[in-house]
Length: 141
Image (cartoon, rainbow, N blue to C red; front, side):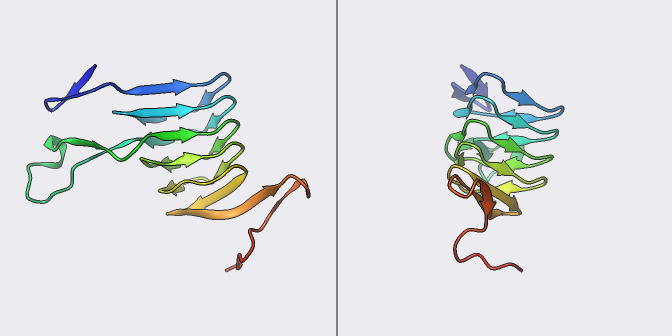
């Protein structure tokens, strides 16, 4: 049991087999972060399942209660690029690719290539075509 500002938590960070985490990565949890087998996290990756309360009527941000916005789950064989941030409540399917400097604020299914701030779907891997393809309705900008 861990404590912060009078609150008690039972955080859980679970790493599967053959997970590689780059230097200076930051994983913070008050609930649950699960990273399945074969994932690769680049340098400076940030993954969190929590936030500080943001009510402007309260005390300093650092003294505000911590709030879980939901567990984080990273599917098997997913790659998370340099300085990417995976925010609370996100689930990434297996074999996803997250671009460098992306901020992932919502969940994506298996075989998704995502990038941006906030991250959005760029391509999906097609098991029939054996290639990354544009999602239907995708417009190149």
